[in-house]
Length: 146
Image 1 (cartoon, one colour):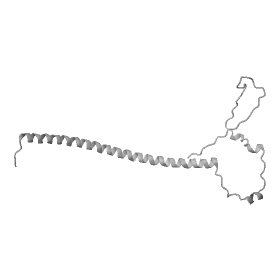
Image 2 (cartoon, one colour):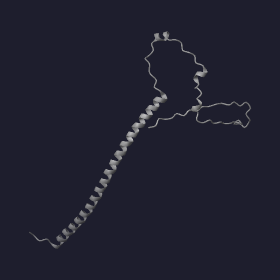
Image 3 (cartoon, helix red, strand yellow):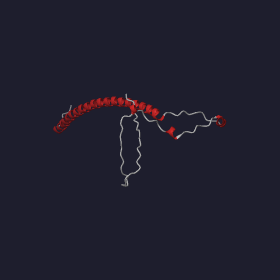
Image 4 (spheres, helix red, strand yellow):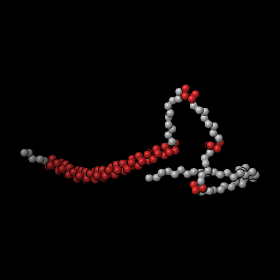
């Protein structure tokens, strides 16, 4: 075996010191990355659980919206197409009066608030002479709760 010169020996020693420093730095970096990986896995799991609960809530809310739409808009049944001969057999439709388009006055037990609004002057500033009292009924629609 041949002997190493002092220059070669110094080069190898400096290389060894550099490798030792790199090894320590790499171990620190690996430790940091492992901790970050654990933290991210935990955060990922929490987000998956939150996502699951939010999806369940959205599904429930979609059902509620569907029920409300059915209540409000009431599905119209589609009849079979009318043939020309069927027009002749049908009875004439009844003529409706003006009152049939109005809603009935609510019972006194159903009225929650009575508000009076007095109007003494017109928007233009002149006094009103022939005033008429009108009654307006506002109906609240209560939404179903869980």
